[in-house]
Amino acid sequence: MSLFRRPSADPLWRDEFSVFSDDERYVTRRQFAKFLVLASLGMFVGNLWILVRSWFTRQPVYPAAAIARADEIPVGGVKLFLYPTPKDQCILVRTGADEYAAYSQKCTHLSCAVFYSAQHGRLECPCHNGAFSVRDGSVLQGPPPRPLPRVVLERRGNELVALGLKIQPEAQHG
Ligand code: FES
Image (tube, rainbow, N blue to C red; front, side, top):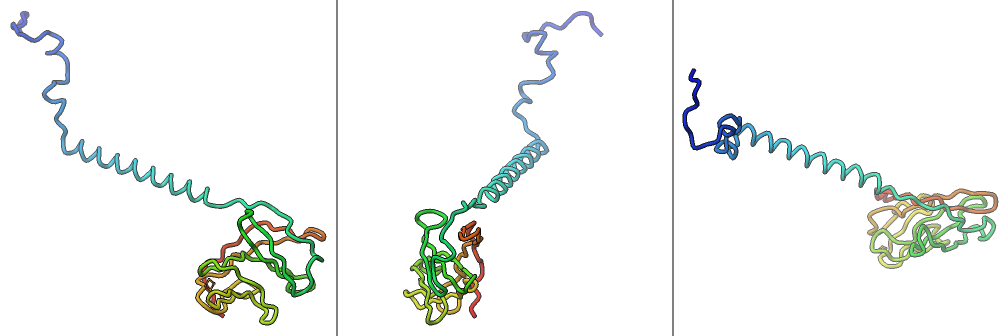
């Protein structure tokens, strides 16, 4: 080992620095694969986070709203009301002395307003002869693909209170 350093144009620190500028831009296949795996993992976790967040924010929170007095309508009578927003028309039917059913009035086919037919004891849509059961909102006839969304009701003393909307997924032709 020589005590004297050979003469060089480069400064001493460049010889002793462990990373050489020629190697800086060189990426091995393993490094590149590692980068791809980490980037994919990051994207996967990000998408999973978006999915989980949208799942939780999708659950709507419905207000509780008094919609009618229990003795306000006779058996077989109806009352229209707006729920859960002032744009959402709903229909309440008194089906028995102490039985009430309420649904969105918007037909699940092409959104015409359904009405209660006391003669047939069902909800009917005038546009394409769709019909729904007043008992559970299921499709009885016609083109509607899904049951009517049902308004969840609770009786509080003499008041009927809407607590939410229950979307019913499958058509049940009776
Ligand atoms: S819109 Fe109601 S049956 Fe078509």
